[in-house]
Length: 196
Image (cartoon, rainbow, N blue to C red; front, side, top):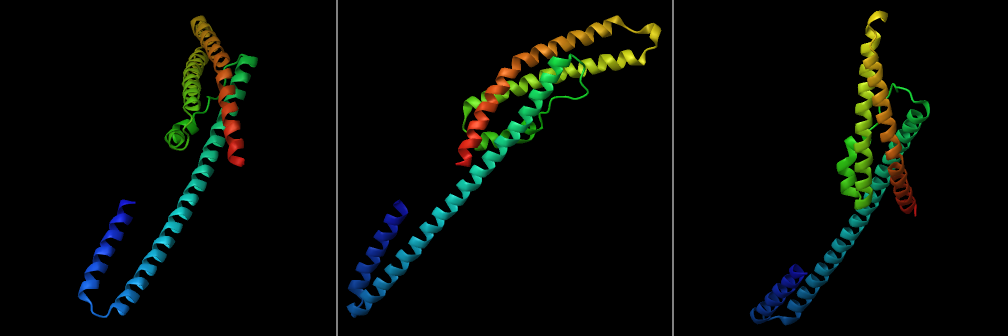
């Protein structure tokens, strides 16, 4: 706004100077009027271009935010299913919980989403996923160490370690399931809002 006001004042000063310096006032006023009309037309076109560009940026931002939310939703649902399997079957899984979306898109989520509550809950859930993955790693390591031993040297300590880590992973899984459900609720609601 200050720029526009400065330009208008500069034009008025130039017009006053030219009014004193030029003897043919009719030609001066016609030239100045044409120049002002051209300036106003260009300014109007420029402003319309800025508005269109801003709307396109908002549309792209909305599309990207929805896409990021959908990726988080898919990963959370997959991890929820894995945790439910772990709890139901009480077995040592051959997989780890996925954290790819958080690892790759955490910064983008922070850029696109301003939902602090969602960020806190996702951070909590993914922190628990890391702990569960650590326990899965320990179970797999204990299982592999015991498999490598001959029948005579099988270790009860390794079996106890596997069971202890399994119980810990199940406990962590049971605790994180409500957080996952809360995250999914927030994400589903946000995705629906972006469909409107």
